[in-house]
Length: 113
Image (cartoon, rainbow, N blue to C red; front, side):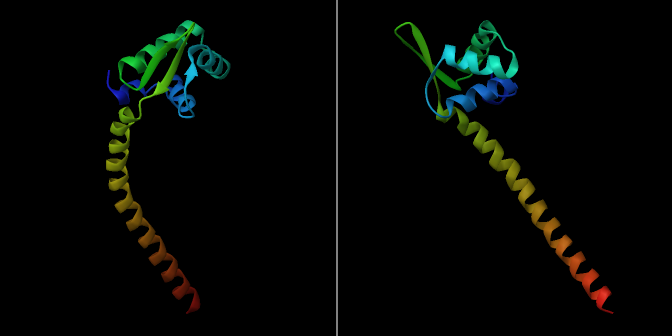
């Protein structure tokens, strides 16, 4: 599964958001998304497995818990995609801003007459 596909699910996106602040245990993550989305611990584990297999998160056993963390390099694909989309929209939004300003100027000139 690709990174973008893995992040297509709102629960998985939330897990990544929670991990943006640093490592968390599977139990902490399950409690957080369980409270927010009503997702069970086994379902959270499946979501974490999808993220791990897509290369979005790493997991390390530490004693009796498993700690998860975000792999920043995995989000490079998302950043590149967002830049391409933003580049497309930036030009269009700049043109729209110009047209809105032109229309406002023309209305002011018409009102002054």
